[in-house]
Length: 281
Length: 267
Image 1 (cartoon, each protein chain N blue to C red):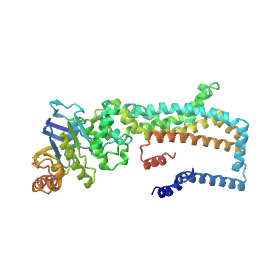
Image 2 (image 1 turned 60 degrees about the vertical axis):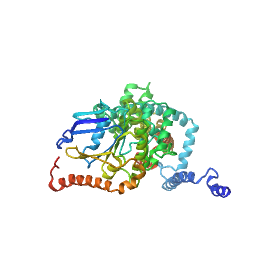
Image 3 (image 1 turned 45 degrees about the horizontal axis):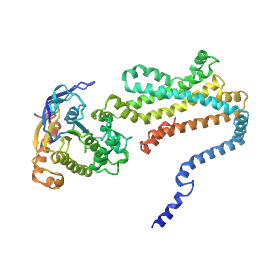
Image 4 (image 1 turned 135 degrees about the vertical axis):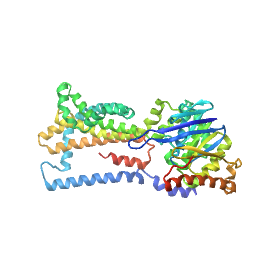
């Protein structure tokens, strides 16, 4: 019996390319491959200065890397992103929780948060620049990253706290939970899925804020490289930097996603997929 | 012993709605070790009354005491089982069961042992590490029951605990509740809208009527105990049929008066 069982199981266990792995890797891989081929074909046929084929873009990316323009600027950009986004998460989640928990705090701050959420944060860039000047350029970029990302985190966190099921809070009270216990043992874990939804949306916005600041206000980091290439009408250079930015954004997004999956692993898989769809910003 | 005397509650006016007299002069006495079922149509205030005993809701007039002490909030002497289970979806079955103990600061090893003991009692041995979402409704409510029993309360407050379950699961859980109750002999207040359930489980059935919510009368259930092993016989007996028919007659009257005449039923 055991021999037969082993034979049946064998094909599924063998090697790295299990059925499940292939199923999860193959569709995005094929999607990317088809996209790249289409890009190449259309760009070659169309033959426009501003739409170079992907091979040219990758060659330019190689050149820029060799000139040392990518790596050092990538480090600059990522450092700013890490500092600014961490600030957004810590302050944003705290503020959101206060707003979600205390009706009066929410009533007082609601109008500001929504105003900031809907206003184009880039308009603050010249103001930051005027305040911090050339000497502290980094602060301007940080300010933009934070302004771009923090409000969606605040709004989502506040909503997360408000929508914790009342039934669970009643349950906690009936078992004599203190206010502190209610918060840490019920409200906090129950709000995690939505808090993370906000953090993920905030991540995308943080990257946008960083690049916008670097490109349009002060030419530093990856955005600075893109701007310099653009001014020389190097479409392949601009797209090369864009490629790097997209990869950075995707890696960051994936990191947040992994953390999210760890913290909210209790969510049923259907809810998780629903959440992912809702997050497609 | 729980004593409820002259308890009234009015929900204040909301927008265009007039104030609602939810409970009016409710008097009720529940002896230690008694299984009291409260039966009534929806909107009669039975859940409100239970939440007051639990210390989760306030009232305007009257007094509720548990063993002579006025109820001012939730207490360790009472534990509640909820209609919608109210399990924490992120916590395992074991952690959910041990939640009351965790809040009281019982050390981990000890509360784990106690939780496993109760999970065995409610028939969930082997499911300790599952999440609530992986369980059926019936199993989830077993966790809810185990969680309440884990804190070893004197009084078990059960708010239509089987109301959200299908008929078959419900019957099984009724039997098991009887079995567990006959072992532990806790004071139980059990809310239901099913007269069969009320009669099968209770020593007494308090019938409530709506608008305003009040106790209409209390029926003694003279069916012998223990009942867990004889549920089928009990439900087939003439006595059982007589009591449930009588309760149904009264319940139907509450509904028909309102439908046909649009009047409040006479007290």
